[in-house]
Length: 131
Image 1 (tube, rainbow, N blue to C red):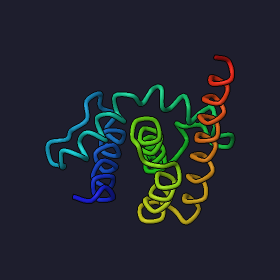
Image 2: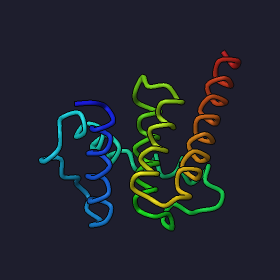
Image 3: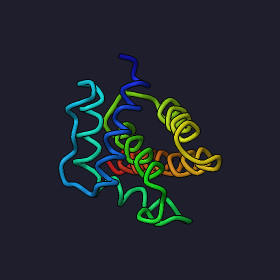
């Protein structure tokens, strides 16, 4: 299974869990790779949501459309926990937004993820100079 397909399946599971407001995510009907992405994202959502909230200046996380919120969550999880480049993660997130959300969501997702990535780069640079 391609990573893009796994990402779509993971997004579907995240969307369902968020819509139903459940604690545990159902990964029984998705691939192993998608399940790992979905479970990792869902179990770390509080920390991820805090990071998104710190970088999203116009929308509070609870006011974001469910699909946008979960695209952001999934993408932040990928930025923090995979070897994928920032550019690939953002590009794939924008593709998901264009496919599953509104016409304006791609730009919004791009902006928030760019801010998250910049913040991560700055914190890593700061850590390196303090050593």
